[in-house]
Image 1 (cartoon, rainbow, N blue to C red):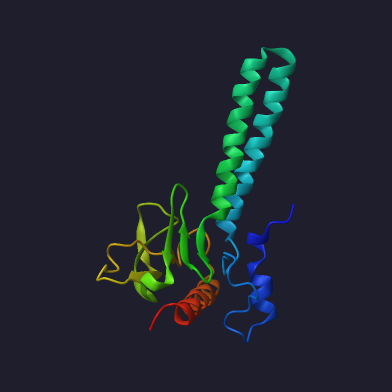
Image 2 (image 1 turned 45 degrees about the vertical axis):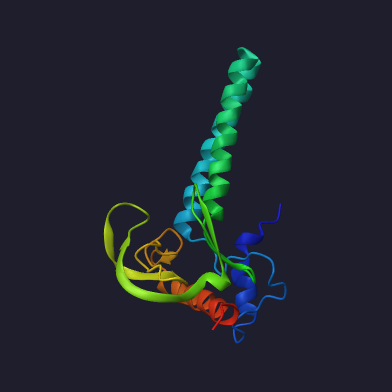
Length: 185
């Protein structure tokens, strides 16, 4: 099964001199690859799901089918959580900017974007309450909604960019290039 959200950097690396190397700009794209922390957590969740699925088969063979269905449903829930974990991040298209979190998705049309900028500030380490000094990509909306009202889109210490500062810089530059091209001036 092809996973197009894992292949964003291949297109970017192929056309390094072009700021927006995508032909079909109406399609939602993540301008970076998921980081090793995010992929590792999803792989562990899928490993857990495989054991739960095996348990569902054993329960179906030896116990009541209703118990097996409950365990099978639990495995499907873990698989859905792993897929959602891989889809988290910042997505761009000609329509706007999309920030996908685990439980929410927030889409901002380019007409409502005042600026997208990288700032030095305290950021959460892997989404935990602990904060460290790092860089964050902030979205400032039209109408006076300041950067304090909107959480950072991505940071140097989230699951995609922890230990990969160059990847964060490249992804932030790409998102800023999309904003410069599509937001009203």
